Length: 376
Image (tube, rainbow, N blue to C red; front, side):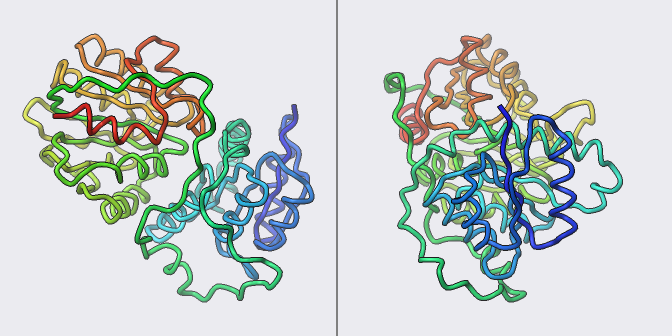
């Protein structure tokens, strides 16, 4: 089945280039374009695309506001384009909170220098997120204000208002779809020395939902592995730290694991843990698809902590985490997977379940409370 795409950007060059790249794939059809958020909403309602690509900074209405309206009126998977800057990271995280599924850096140099690589990555993203659960998700947030009166163009400081400030409470995320099978029973308590959580597409919102349920005195150290560019992980850790009762920071070489602290693997690098509870940050290996890689961190945890690790695999494309989970399982540690109904992309958790490595399968809303129940 051909995937229908709506391309939204105020740059005529970028609209044309993205449309050309996508149209060259026989599995993708560009059904329309829009130059601002207001047009995007109208076109989404009229054309009912399978996927929307969305810029952030546009006249009339910015991309984040448009995403919120689209998720309320015709939920559709949205791929955001973002700049690889700290402010761009903050804006992108706001877009994911608003309902976007995934993002790609908006880099004109890459488009002209590596057209084949850009084409492959963009088309793969479009085809993958077209199969996400976002279309059938219902949002619990109040409906946004009517859009009949266009919003004024964003001032130069508008990026800061959407990006640098952090909401006082977790932003609304999709309500869980009805599960097709009952979740696993509540976990048994165990003196875990480490909780390790790996995720990819859909992960920023999923991690926010899980970690905000944990008390400040959560008794186990936590490591987080989220597939994310180097410019994004610091901003993401700062956001989580402000929203959560536990502490969250981007991991640095030599950091020591401690209860109530979550260390986020830095983008573009690899994170390992030694038996003394110290974190090692290593350069990203070009031979590896993921930097950071869940398998690398899980594997080091298996070697250092034996049966005292509780590993959780959340929403994401691919199978990263499966081989690391296998090592953990062989050492006697526990593995949880997010259930299909609450995943944005049921790839990484599915790999765990199909390999028969999951000790429990839970919906996203249940994982945080079960972490509290499991750790003593």
